[in-house]
Length: 255
Image (cartoon, rainbow, N blue to C red):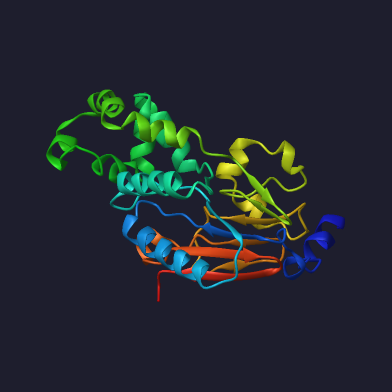
């Protein structure tokens, strides 16, 4: 009975009072999933938006899942690396698809099989391999081919991604958090893969959680969390959340 009553309690809605430190501006980008074309468009919008506002220390956070499903994961990684080199104040979170990418990059056949099932086929084909060669290789041969196919600079770059970023009243993660567990004690597996346990939690968390991973048609503001994965790889809509002080606004590629 008690659990039933707790589930029926109205959600805590602290988002409007959340803020980041003065003098900072943050742009958080949702799951890109191989859509380098949309990433270029969104970065142009972010640069324009940033230039039209008052002076601040601006930074960009990618929420993970840069790769898989879309047609140009290799191009996305190249764009991300160039952006990091040029701007510096750019940070990246490790998504579940990056985790599997790194496992596949070792040439482990079991990891390559799983990688292919979750959208890695498109990532592989974004590198220097033809469709004909890809089709002709069996899984063992493909696993042997991948370590030489994925540039080491791409692998090293992704291996350096973070698991969570905390700025002011916000915590940025890829998938979500385990409810009731302090942020400092969250497991990597949950930060990269969790879904229902996190999405069904209505009580306030330690911070407002900004996440991707779970696709929705529009941005989700659910009181204790903000979800910005708008399914870019098939919807053509890549979304960014912008924060400054207690303000928040959104940019996307749909307009």
